[in-house]
Image (cartoon, rainbow, N blue to C red; front, side, top):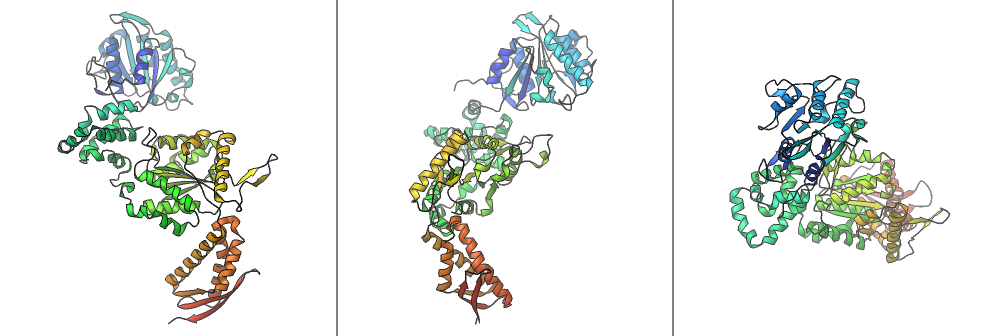
Length: 626
């Protein structure tokens, strides 16, 4: 495998020749693999300060020192140069350090930096570590802090070039910060002497070096590796699949975290074929992944399970199950490059009350054994400009920062779940930027800087888009009606959804992430309405008997009247049928049982119903049970 050199390392080599002050931000607390042979062995794993020490040594610098506000100036490595720095700046060494504060007009630290870089006797590199901690707040600094950074600003302007054996080198100051906005903006903005370099988490190529190279054996207990590797030596394509999956699932992980995975994998005596399962243990603290424990027989019979709860939506259920079966077989996103995407993405569209939410709940019950793991977010509650902070958490310093985000908290607590985003078209447009990252990368960093993973979730959006449109005058009018056949309903709704994302919202990339997973639910047709009605009546009858030993018998005449009313209220789908059952059956039945002081052990025969006059009334006959 060809050696890979990180982009930030290349940038450092380029800009250290021409810029006297470099800010390094990002993943600065990690460890790094040194990519070149030089003053230290190629492939050595180093913290950033040590990495920079050897990098500048290899570039030819004679004096390399470090500074932080706790120790002052010091050597980061055994072959450091604190003595030569002390000589250049006429400073006194106490122990192994030059102790001095950062803050103040005449404070030694910035003054010594300025003195060191403005001389031209020998090239100097000063690495100021943990620079985010030099001041309390960049937006509210006192005069002493202003003076300190002003001294550093002068240093960046006065820095000299020095001729030496390695050629001409520039005296340079490196500030290592978590984020550049941890220091005053006036210090670096519009300053032509400053360059900002961002250190990211390991790229795919860097992770491949760690996993596919000579380090691969170190992920496993020696006896486990010796048992497993002969098979993979004969089937190298299988080994590559295992390694590629692990590399894909560790996207966004730091080197330190990957090293933690390596040690965990060895400690747990993980087999080579199960290498990626250790990531679940690391992320969630579990060994058993619910996706791996799904009952295949139950999944094969899933359609029958769904049909008991979701009536008249055979095509929608079939398409939903196809997506889930892709996830279970590990074939989701095979055409893409990311292994960390959500397990499944679905977009449920169609008229209200047709079973969209019920389908999601049934899916949660089937996959995770609990329909409460269908976590619903009403997107009408996220219609304001700051709504993304409600979902993901407010940034530091803002109200609600400690509470975290509603979405990120939910996923952190229940990583294996259905995330149901209801009426997605009502969300503020800024929310869609977050959804793009979740759908593509399968992870999100919340306001507290913690990474949340969505790779074990199924994400479902629901929408009523396409049921109504607006005419040229802005008047709302039906786009589809129950009189249309399902194929025409499906075509019109899908077309309206595409127009919304492409033309009205201007975000076709959202549609691209959803792909062909738009599932259009049909209207509740009359024959289906009867099934729903009788299923609800049957549920009421069973619960009355189970809880109170009350036997409920409903005559055909009552059933007929209930069905007539249900068919007159199909605009609200199954929800409308439920409303009819509640108002015409449950409420008057409860009134009758209360008035007759019937609590248990009775047979109740419903002989007639007055469905025309409010309050609705039932004609009941009560008999004792044996």
